[in-house]
Structures are given as C-alpha cells and as structure tokens.
Length: 141
Image (cartoon, rainbow, N blue to C red):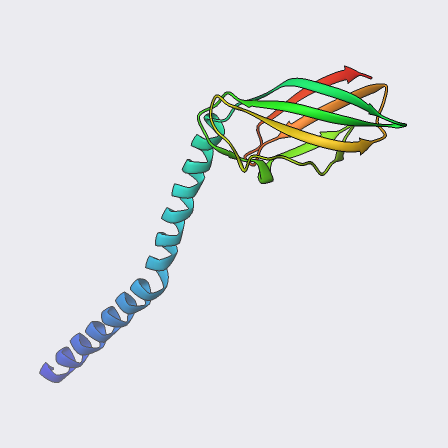
C-alpha cells in the first residue's frame, strides 16, 4: 500500500508540472498578446477622440480646359496627422495630391494641391484622416 501511494503522488506531481509547463508556454503568451492589442486599441481610440479636421478653403484656378484645386485643411484636434495618411476624395474618387508638409500639426493648416483635374459643376470634397475622422465640403465651379 505504501508503494502505490508514492506512485500515485509521483504521477500526480508529474501531471501538475506538465500542466503548468503547457499553461505557461501556451496560455501566457496569448494573454500577453491580448494585453498588447488592448493597449493599442485604447491608444487608437484616444487618437480618434482627439482628432478633428476642417476643410477651411478651396481655391480653384482655370487651367485651359481643366482646373487646379488648392485645398486648405486645418487640424483643430490634438493629434499630429501625417499628410501621406490623409485621403482626399473628389466626387467619390481618390485623388493624388501634392503637399509640402509631412505633418499637419495641431491648430495649423496644410495645403493640398491637385493639378489638371476635369471636375466642374457641383464638386464634393471629402478629407479622411488615418483614424477615420473626416470632413466634407461641396462647391460649385
């Protein structure tokens, strides 16, 4: 009876150690990844809350049969925006633009230039930041 008690204790001890090894090797990294992704989600949510833009001005220049548009976007939020991450749609079409600034700092303006476009009449402009905040304006050319 003494040997079977010792054997049972040894089997249970080994099982517990194997279970702890499996738990620490497999489950703990998953918990760590979950914590990291939760931290990133909170950071993105805070960035979204602190982002605000306004299209303040649009200048149109006639270029023979086409038009050049100069759009002024003001960052009225608290986050620094990358101009390369801003998308501007004209009548629903994503357009390439030129901008001399790499970043739109809080409470500053940046100028986005579109050259040689054929849009005229009722034109809708929509600016979208990297975290989904947008502004919309409509003009008649």
